[in-house]
Length: 236
Image 1 (tube, rainbow, N blue to C red):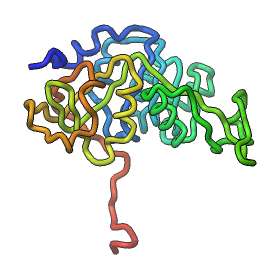
Image 2: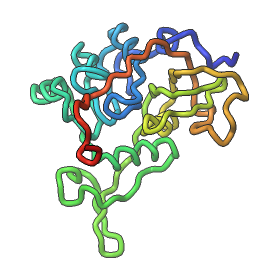
Image 3: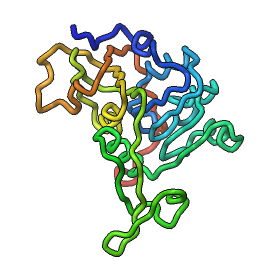
Image 4: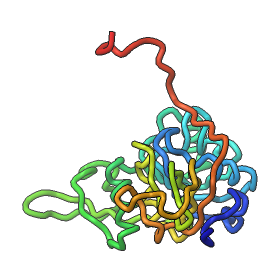
């Protein structure tokens, strides 16, 4: 086995301390690194800056860290369905930096690619552009957005090998590959830890060079946000 393989979340997160800046993969409750979130909650690590699409939903996922008052700041693009973040933001207990979703994804990608920033028309003339340079290119206004980086990235993949090569499941891929690239240490929990050579090169979504620690997850909850009780109109 590679030196990247660790026994579990406790070993993988042993050096994650107070004040850490952490990117967390997932979209809503899909693709959440459940074991990493639970271990961070167990450790009681505080003063965290969490960079994620949303900081939990309906009291689950990353919301457990909010409920335990472990989060100092959130950089995200969606806070609907998260009463914990809403209440703490309005009370001045948590700083929230909202980004348009595409801008958030591109800021993370820029951080991993070593790009110093990028121009986007999204947010021009709104509060999104406040305090940021705005410039004109070919007669159109653009906001300069800076890259995002982190100390750690917590991500979940469907398959991974001992070298850290990863394959994600469908849309659970979302932000995760770029987060691994933008963090100093990428910690990955996988549904299936397979042997070297079991993943075909063309099936690898993220090369292991961007992964520092990997472990086999067990007993995933895989919660979902809304239960359908009747067919969609198109299926009726």
